[in-house]
Length: 475
Image 1 (tube, one colour):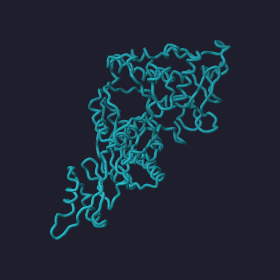
Image 2: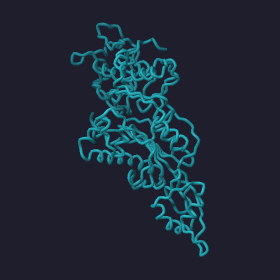
Image 3: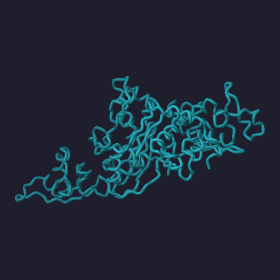
Image 4: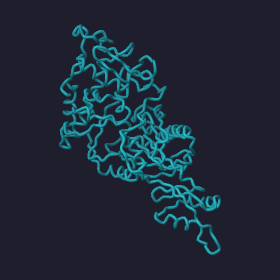
């Protein structure tokens, strides 16, 4: 894929769930008694006694600056405490400013939320490109770089840190707040992204059939992870936000991100992002007044769903020819490209039969994963209470199109919900609530991961999923 020239549309808000505001990181304003000839306890003991409700762990860095901080503000200070860790000590009362950072570290984009840990309010939202994209648009390319180049993992880590610091600086600039007031960060991402963030060798993903799991809860010294502007930052990768009993993953390829499609592109300026198809056709194009340059994942789903609904595409992916439907109102859009049937969406933007089959294979992989997971749980599709479509693709795809393609089980549309950035939402929840953070930390131990490769039922289930759903069979 060509290098990105503009930032893709990114989901910054999630489905939303209220949590009790009780973050693991908090500030305590203290006024300690100054030493006297009668009281020679030193500086640490009075601090520990003032925080005696905590089993306080004081790092050497905090101990070194404690005498200076105390005397610079007449023994008035603010202790920044994360769990039982003394994260920082600051002169005077700074308890009014206590910020946390929630990050969704995506393969293509990074979404960030700056949050006031005292009020729970979102101070600023933003997104940026993950500049690792210049080493490859998919995780396999980046794993390969880390394996083949001696300094590859370090290069990828430096690149993603710069990509993270970019939106952080922008968020802080929009609020006139200091990076010194950002104390806690929770980073959510897939296993490869977390490994590359920490410069941990990701070769296990490529060389063996082993699941190398990222740490569920870890705290890293800020000098190892953060920029100078956030030198008090701690980071905890967070994997999910809801209790789950079973999970799997399916190799859907990059079709829904615009790759492997003749006129496919990411959701940037000029991309067709939504289509309404009937007797006429209407296009929604990203960017005010721009001509269509290609089609992104959500538009692709709408296009195929529309072709199925208008009977120009049958369930076995055969695209009709003009002479078969001469009276169809969209007949003129049926064209031939390099001897292959195609459907013209806009001037220079066509969907070919090969594109449809590529999309079908991606859909089949996902549908097969869903079917195997349901079978293992002993459930039928109609017993599913809710289907959440997550991420940027899940945010902008029409649930009706997802169901029409077979991406979602054939259930009532009211139960198919675009949940937005569930990854960022989970990180925000963990940032705001110690209970939610603990729940997330325990999820990995309770989830049963269903590995698809090597299963005897994978091929027949995949084959059974090949056809698109017949229009009209699901209401």
